[in-house]
Image (cartoon, rainbow, N blue to C red; front, side, top):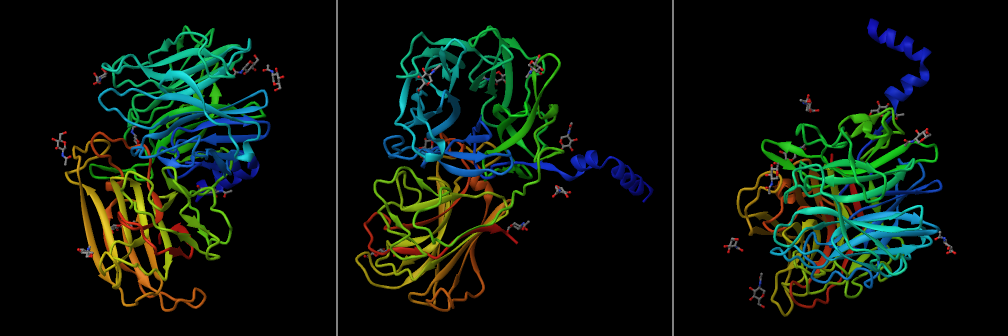
Length: 577
Ligand SMILES: *[C@@H]1O[C@H](CO)[C@@H](O)[C@H](O)[C@H]1NC(C)=O
Ligand SMILES: *[C@@H]1O[C@H](CO)[C@@H](O)[C@H](O)[C@H]1NC(C)=O
Ligand SMILES: *[C@@H]1O[C@H](CO)[C@@H](O)[C@H](O)[C@H]1NC(C)=O
Ligand SMILES: *[C@@H]1O[C@H](CO)[C@@H](O)[C@H](O)[C@H]1NC(C)=O
Ligand SMILES: *[C@@H]1O[C@H](CO)[C@@H](O)[C@H](O)[C@H]1NC(C)=O
Ligand SMILES: *[C@@H]1O[C@H](CO)[C@@H](O)[C@H](O)[C@H]1NC(C)=O
Ligand SMILES: *[C@@H]1O[C@H](CO)[C@@H](O)[C@H](O)[C@H]1NC(C)=O
Ligand SMILES: *[C@@H]1O[C@H](CO)[C@@H](O)[C@H](O)[C@H]1NC(C)=O
């Protein structure tokens, strides 16, 4: 009590200090839900962040903020098939780590789109950039390709007009020793002006697990800095920085490296931190963004179904001129005294009253043709089935939106769905990728050529063998469990829910009392499956874990054309109770 009084007294005197110490905290992640490989840019009073999207379409979301706290999705850099044609692209290939820059009135977004994997060779594709004069227009150019084979491309404009492309590549296809490579390019064509030079091999022993990548070059007070990520994309992930007299080095190592690394203490609530980019505010202060995961640990299992999210932190410079990330402290979910509070938890409730889909929805791979409509039946999202189903390495009639908190519930009503055959199915999913998705929907019970009733179908997938934390799975096959639950109505609406909690998901449904959305009421929810969310946190052998979970709705003919549209009444993502 005495201490409380003393504290209150001191706070009355030092109102401002106490307020900033105790009342305000920057709440991380600033972009909850999978948003890996963030890159940040400021132009005037506007900040922009872009992140990776892999086999999702459209690619590379652009988030905008004027205060670094409130971020709004304003569009995607790769939003036309001419920029991103993901046809049959494997899970976790697709659009990788962007860099966002601005030069002389033009915005540049560097990207690497990996269309195929050749596991044996691990050869990389050509990176490219797209440009726009108006980043709010959502209208970016077609790709302008670099010559280099690699990923994590960066562009840097030197004061003399030289433009440097810097990327992560490998020494050869056999040893696969990663390094930071660079050459000068002609910015109007992307063509090389000089040969590639290996400018840095990182701070770790130079073998195939060191993985120096994610390079960014900065010129700060006449000194060039090279910021990179190292250690692979798991717990050893980190950021390190070098400086030198030219954009190509030679590099002086920061004795404080790594400047961002939480892997020394695996109990910290944020892990895998790295892949950073920094920006200066108009007031001269510096800020950084990096990726990190928030593992939900139970025993030996790390549940990381939300994937790698985007974190923000203050950057200061020490007396030697080296940047210090987050005051030298491990990255955390709250940074006291910085900016303003902003909760992770959000309610998303779309009643489908607009004519076009909001920007936060995604397709899996590039649609061959449209399969959705918001105008065919006003205030409903109508999906026209195609022959692909969730899990096919193609473009199912499915719309996805990122899960944004561990304890989040997804809910919709599938309205009057009348499956015309036993292959016709529509429902909802919690989806990681082709090998990891869990669905609840309504499917026909008749024959393949028509007629019959309908039941609820629940499908859960898990790896065939014991799975452990990060990358320890040795399985390359998946066990699918399918159950059917009767429905009492022939055509009535069915509410579908996926309840997420930190370490599990439950799938459930309830039948509606009436076909009229205004008077409809639903009974108690019947849960048909509960499963461990670690199954959305591991990758099959020869695959990667780069994304995170999304919620989705789909309509499929399971290998055949289908004539039954599926109408969804609303899309709600809300905190689980
Ligand atoms: C900010 O959050 C902290 C806890 O995270 C809370 O104690 C404080 O009251 C909040 N401040 C404001 C201004 O909302
Ligand atoms: C900047 O852009 C203008 C107009 O596009 C062009 O005329 C000028 O040469 C550019 N300057 C530099 C330094 O690239
Ligand atoms: C690379 O070196 C590190 C540190 O010596 C070691 O832990 C790791 O196993 C090595 N990786 C390979 C592929 O040799
Ligand atoms: C750059 O130099 C100015 C003037 O010496 C100094 O005030 C400032 O702190 C320096 N900035 C950085 C990031 O080192
Ligand atoms: C590791 O992190 C945990 C959780 O923040 C903390 O309790 C513990 O003291 C840390 N261990 C060390 C050695 O710093
Ligand atoms: C669907 O109907 C066909 C007959 O048209 C039948 O052979 C098949 O087993 C049925 N499939 C299911 C899952 O009921
Ligand atoms: C799993 O991988 C092993 C070795 O890579 C292979 O022999 C086996 O056939 C694979 N099994 C399946 C189901 O793909
Ligand atoms: C999460 O779900 C599991 C399995 O249903 C349950 O055992 C656990 O109590 C739930 N945790 C919370 C915080 O609701």
